[in-house]
Length: 451
Image 1 (spheres, rainbow, N blue to C red):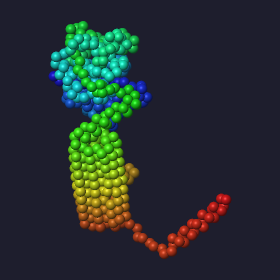
Image 2 (cartoon, rainbow, N blue to C red; image 1 turned 30 degrees about the horizontal axis):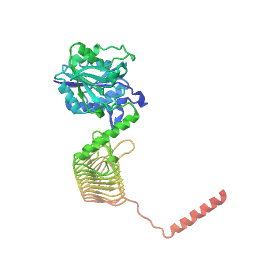
Image 3 (cartoon, rainbow, N blue to C red; image 1 turned 135 degrees about the vertical axis):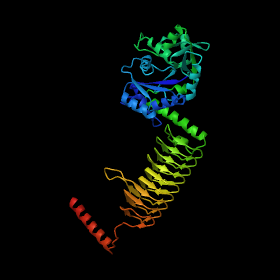
Image 4 (tube, one colour; image 1 turned 90 degrees about the vertical axis):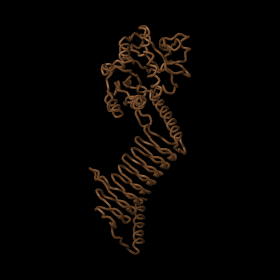
């Protein structure tokens, strides 16, 4: 049976004390909403509906950045979880499969947990996700009769016997679309908060003779984020899991706790990551590459055998072919570095291509911005760029050419040519001593006048 996701993302998140909608606060450089959407992605949902409220335009933009086909509906008043789910009914009026309700601020639900919920739906009308709580606190309790779920009892309404139950409600539910929306329509706001609660659908369903059951998961999966402190804690949990997964897959992290990963970081087996490396969004590092200490990578691709750093920065659009070397205090942006090329010291290569086996000397800069537009620099294969060369784009340097140290390149250099473009040196014997004597006398006179 086909599946649809309904992700509740309308909350402001008052405890975040932020203008940013709660579900857009990042974990591992990706909005919490993306983590929730990624949880459901392996189910290959036919439809994904995001229920937005506070900051709806920004939430919609973020949702479609992850899934261009995501549909967004507006909950203009936040009247409870059942009311939020009900806003998706119009979008799914013609949908005949199962709906899974997720929360945009619950980022750690695992895909296999959702798969088990879908499997349980084959034998029950409603499936609730529960967990055994170490400290049940004020969670809603799941009251069972064998394998059947009788009802969900909120803490404030629970008896002492019910409060002793440790099986708690995560809030996630799956049911056939028509069943879910019909049950939601029958919920009541006759409670202290005046809200329509999704938990009420279980009791309504049982009164109609429908069946309900519970699938359980580890409590850590159900972690909800409501404050900056909880956000930081969730990020730490993600990092620990992601680092562990990388090491399990054959990646060497020499100081794991110092490496920061993004949600979409991909690193191949036998790659080595040294201490204090930061991976921004959109980074792929192939097998056998080495990222040395204190480097920062974002939106880039590093091929097999490449060495990056220490203290290197790869910005979006950086493409490193096999066995390239990017050294200390080098920045690469929107540039392709071909196999075997080296940019080892104190250089900036932006909006450029560097050919195979080319060597870029220390202090080289591609001057790519004229104050209005960006321009490209094309450097061929087996080129030697002398230290402190300024390449004023747009400009090209042909294969096997050379630039002399300190050259400012403003015209194309043909293959095999040597470009020299620096001011003629003039040496004035004895002039340094005269100049220092004059400057010291001037300083002494100024000091005397000020005293």
